[in-house]
Amino acid sequence: MSTNSEDRPGLPASPSGAETGDGRLALAEAAFRLKDEPRGGWVLRGVRDPESVADHSWGTALLCALYAEEAGVDTGGAVKMALVHDLAEAETGDIVARADPADRSVGEERKAALEAAAVHTLLRDDFTELRAAWQAYEDRASAIALFVRDMNLIDMCMQAVIYHEEHRYDRAVAIPSRGGFTHLDEFFASAAPRLSTELGHRLFLTLERRYRASR
Image (cartoon, rainbow, N blue to C red):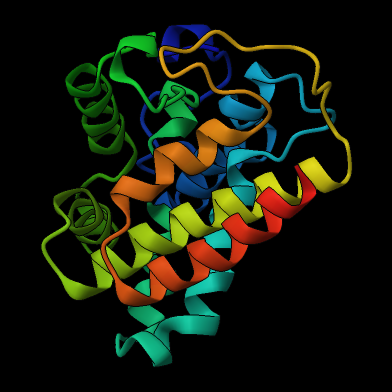
């Protein structure tokens, strides 16, 4: 999967609206690349017809809309944050985050730097509100950000359950990992230590039990 904009022909170099006269339209065109960017973790495991990054962002946003009131956070703010939380991947591509840092092709600090640079390019001065939402998600400094990050992980675990139950990958193929994970276990191992809310933990346990029962 690509990790720089040079490998992504057609991405507007400066989505400022200079050519269209509307910066919002230019940003949308750049962001629409996420519709064709497959989620790298599923690709790694040979999942047939895997979801795109845009699919994942929508799933996270839907979970936010469904659970924000229960979590005690603003629904609109959470949905907005969910929709932009992976926006940088329109430039960087989806860089796979593995459960063990030693298995990653790109280190966490390098990944963060690449994504920050991408957001700086995509969200210029006209999009201060969206940029602030993205930064808040990265900083994990608010109740909304912690909630959205958990819904991001819950979306991933729910998708893992669906792919496993639908036999969308070859379970006999082992993907090398430091933890020796088989099947789709690594997704749950990756999510568990990153959850930070009571709601997130509860939903995770529900999905993990369903996944284990199908194993």
